[in-house]
Image 1 (tube, one colour):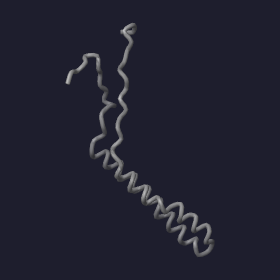
Image 2 (image 1 turned 90 degrees about the vertical axis):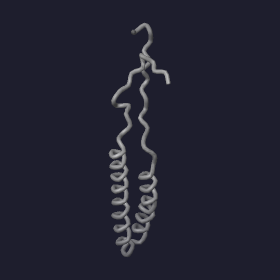
Image 3 (image 1 turned 60 degrees about the vertical axis):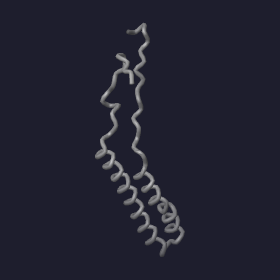
Image 4 (image 1 turned 30 degrees about the horizontal axis):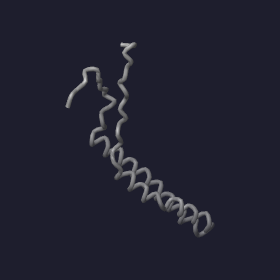
Length: 91
């Protein structure tokens, strides 16, 4: 691989560490599942009194479990590379 001397790298271009990525995935999964469980419990308790409200809450929070798993298993984010292009007139 040939390196260009004019090409510069930035610390912000670095990928997050494996531990940081795992922490982020766990946090996302935990938050979404907490919302799912609270919504499911509220929807279940409301179902006995106002069945339509409880049913709507259960239907809305139902897919959150699936979404949480998809986001937790998603590939790590890729850092966008900044263009280091500088016109010759400005060098």
